Image 1: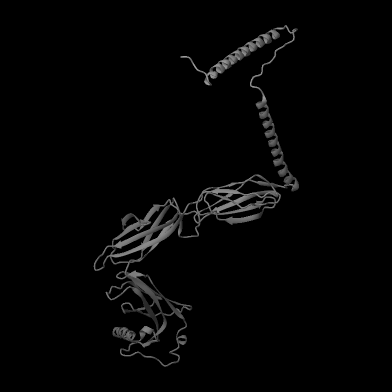
Image 2 (image 1 turned 135 degrees about the vertical axis):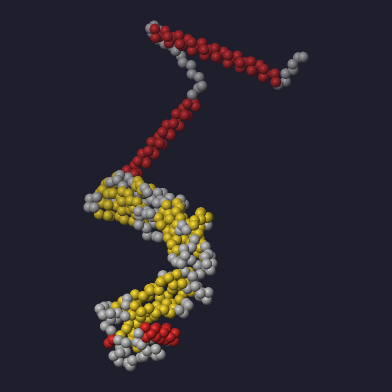
Length: 452
């Protein structure tokens, strides 16, 4: 019995090398050593007549894998109808990387090749195919019930996945945009497996500047405080062991940083007239924001105006002019960017009926009245200046009081008058004396001869 099973395996291997790579229908008569028996087309050649199940096999792998590392393959057989009788399957594995083949006879719906190593010097980095043919035993025959394949990749450099992580309370929509001034983690999960755990060196760079180098630590944490584009790079080197040479791989990530929005303030009037447009001034922090606003009518709790815009300048935004009908409103503003969102609400805005023509008249009367008042002030000031220029420099009053005024008050005024009169007379004398002296002196300058 043991020899017959061995002959069956040898027979299958021999036939696979010839024609089994295409997984043609194969019915092997159990116990024959030298040939494969193909029954005549009929009941024995019709799979639906032989088996009640309709089988399907899915094949997967853990690649990509660097040449010399371990890779796993898995074949999973499934069927719509499960028959409780004993299952006897034969899985035939074949690949076109090293042209190796493997047979596995089992009662399970799964078959796997674990930790397989493609370590031949003749294997080049490329994509290859692993094919599986599944046979089920029927009486003294094995009948093919399913076939499938999986593509796997062998590489010359290390394999892995780079991850970027930052703790956010806001649900981001752009995976490559992150927040400034928050701790961020950059990591690399290597997927290659080796029989002996090697040593890996991780070198981390930000915008081309080397930050640090760590042994066997696959993550790096940092805080970035500048908005805009940023380049993150990690270089991984594996120390050589055995006949494996040193392996390397680098990962590059282009990400964008934005400033988180924290505060929003709405500046608006508390009262307004119906026919006078007005604007809202929205101030905020954060970068690269979108401002959305809407007016809610408090009388019927309905939205009457809704719009969004992206400010050209940072820090503040002035909405376009808005006109509202009579009533009471509140303004709800939502400021968002790719990393945050903050909402704000204004105080109650009361809109009154503006009166139409009366308001237009008041806007014309007020400027005219103030212009006329200004003109009157200018004319009065000019007349006063002209009158002052026409007056004499000194005016002497003639204090000729009535002789009957003998009271103490009249005596005081008399003394004051005499004092002023003597003061002006003395000044007049000094002025005339100086003038005469000047005339006598200046007369000598024309035709006069002085005696020596």
